[in-house]
Length: 225
Length: 363
Image (tube, rainbow over all chains, first blue to last red):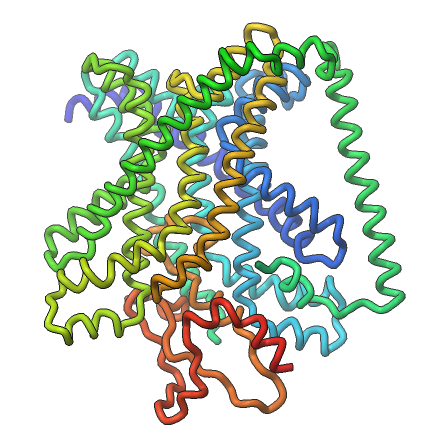
């Protein structure tokens, strides 16, 4: 017990979790926007938009996140001089957020597409019969129901995103949890099990409410048919 | 299956005017994407105060025979070795804990549930770092290799365990009832009737999980495991061509994962012959606590519904429902079931394969 207290006193553990939560929220915002655009492209009548969207999703679904993160720092930043800020820490933070967003957008698009699959054909047919064009039937009829139907996979994606935010260590974000954990183990190898339990339980505590909320929302929002 | 016909649902067969408009948008979009590509290539060609990233001097050491024999192939072998062992381990782990969570004993159920939920919630990288350091302190041989393997086994094993649980939960109730009627105990029915079918049902989702395992081995490069990513970084730091070596590694990862994804799409039709549970995996592996499964809604939406006054089809059985999550694994959808009208019933295994053609025929 004393081990735990002294660890909390000498390291800013809540601060590290806060960095991960920030990364998660920013990436969730950007990837939702990008994922919505991708799924609209995917269901549009324009073949080039469909192909680009499908290609994007295939590419990022079959690519390790770690390589994307390494690429953001060693490729995009070091070689191509893509930079968000002169401050190294802020810059790496945003590079990591960009990498996470690009990666997660593919999964958001796939979740939304599975939500579209839950909308019965009759809804789209009725929209067409009423004379709505593609944009109208997509934004007024299909997407509102699809989003309600894809709450469960979207919640899973959010949980995966929170866990994936630890990979920001590969993008040199030194203040987030997995980097802090390595640092703590380096200096206090005697309490390695306690250190692991602190971080593991931290994630369990963060993820349980998301899981419960997802279950509650997908039950509450499901379109009864 | 499907993106073409699910998209064609949203809009009518366009007329001449619509076709013209679509063609114009198509061209504009194509030109836009080409412009973006050209801009990227120009940036690569001439980055601000950097070298030309397209020059052969940088690409040659990333592609020549030495790079392959000394870096990529050993790295790929390390990646595949770790992934292979992790897959075997996670299937064993998943079988043990998945079945454990279904056994009648409350204590065994509880322990398995806690282990599974814990392993699913902790990020793989956190586990990897912990095991790496712990093994190093214990002076075990090749700590980073075993850290990668064991972390992947724990995480993916818990996902496999959940796949087995939902595979059993998604079986029609008649399977268990028939086994009990034959005089089997709950455990016997589980082991010899339900779990074997659940294993077939989960295979496609397990192959999808294989892609996750392969992708996650790249995390090993953070704990100094000399996998493909780590080797390509080493090569890149030797010749200052990290961008090029990363691209080569990315292409290798992509090809392997893409092939596995195709296999996962091809399997469901094969596996449906062996099981009554639905074999089509969900697009995202189920990881949320208490998985609210969408399969039911998806199945209903995919059914072709004959139009124009023909008899409505009712569902005898549905697998879990989003409408009532409480006890979702046991919910059975019995709305409108009329035993005297068997022709109005859908056979679950059938509408997986024939729903398209039926829907078209009804029109």
